[in-house]
Length: 79
Image (cartoon, rainbow, N blue to C red; front, top):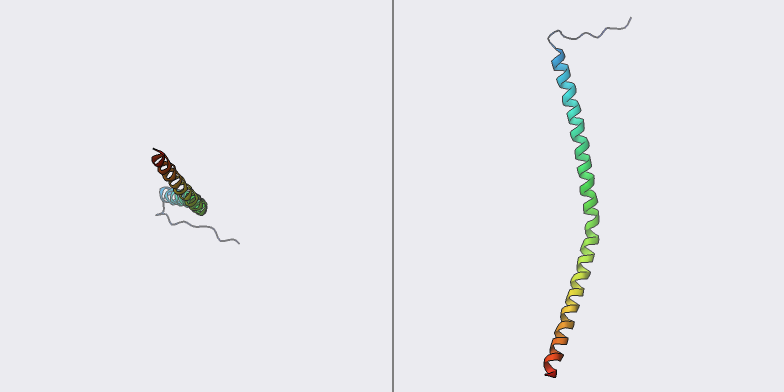
């Protein structure tokens, strides 16, 4: 003989529904948090590439400034 499930009569359907809804909300929240975490991890993974590109661009701008200074100096000397 299997034992039957007995529920305390003080526990109403509203309490059971509330617990189910809270559990569902917690699961949705955890899923959204995991999605946000994945997005942050992807963004952090691209940071080294961005830093390298920025360093190269800064060097190119420095080279362009030095070239412009030389051109201006030559133009001033020719006058």
